[in-house]
Length: 490
Ligand code: ADP
Image (cartoon, rainbow, N blue to C red; front, side, top):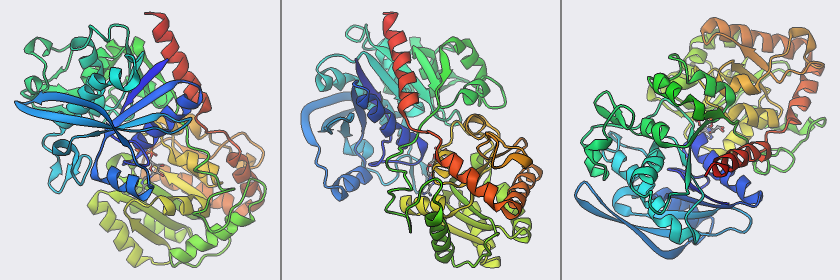
């Protein structure tokens, strides 16, 4: 089986969050299951930098993609990077479109030509696929709005030689849909006959994600709970009605994590390695993290970590609202994140008011993320919505108990334990139902009580959640089953 993934970001070369991590881990997991997997992604300046740092040298494949976009000729070259046992990655070089500092945003907001940049990526990946893979792909797998035109190009423009190819769209987040002016339609190479409400048209504009939903043969999202939620007006971001019409194609498959890169037994980024049942190293990581944050703490003060984008979705403004109460509870709040400048400033200010209780590091920092998961007693994830969430899985792997709002993938992965069965129950953390200050206060208050009053039970629970299996194996098997079902219907 030949599978082509097309994604606007692929870790470790380009990454703004879960999308980049999944676009690298899933293809690799499929490759280790014996599938011939190729990935096409843009060559941004940061990709060049990461390749250089890692001393990786992709080679020019001799294969180009060419397209007229809005009257301008665009030429892309595929630079191929082969890795034994892993997916083959093809970086699409087109400096006019991808040689930008921000992947999606410049200094003044989203790049104005994003529809054309990602339209080109989607079309070029398909155009180049036969030559790059030696045969047309059996499956093309698109991710989020950025590559949602893959199924539409495949069905409407390339149906002659992609007649046997089936398409899958994975929705990592319904909130971002690639809505743009309708005059982009001819620029992207489609004629006006495609502009209707069963297709890409959306309130007299274009909506890339809607096109993906319309034309993909299967739609997945990154957790079963989120798959159910996006069919409702509360979480469907105005596409719930349309998605319901295509509901027969939709399923949820939980993301996994890279358990080799995230392993407290071997992690070189943390102060001391440790394992379930032997948490002395974790205590050393806790002390090192507190020192890094310039804090002192009693053994029974809860060290509460956050590693997150600072976006409205993540609900961290509610944490900021509660800070004075958290300080009263003796909580040590350690935050790594960036995004909303107002929220960054708010946490900086709170850090200056309560230097022994609140610390924030603004920016993206993979090593610090490891140190926080290793050093924290608990991690709080107050998301208003959460398609899957990886943070809670990393936290559990490092024995930090997740405190999470019961939504989306958090509901699927964080099972609450009752107060009296911390050590004995089957729970995996603390879960609360209402994304409000009251809900969060109740949840963190419970964590503080349990941590103070039952330290042995807490350690047993930490060791238990460290042993849960969040690796990609099971999820990759579900994707293979999905591909097989599609191919059986050809
Ligand atoms: P999303 O994809 O919505 O950002 P996820 O929880 O699915 O949220 O994945 C985000 C991942 O990125 C998490 O693994 C988190 O640990 C990591 N992350 C988020 N912000 C940062 C940051 N500032 N530095 C390092 N890692 C981060």
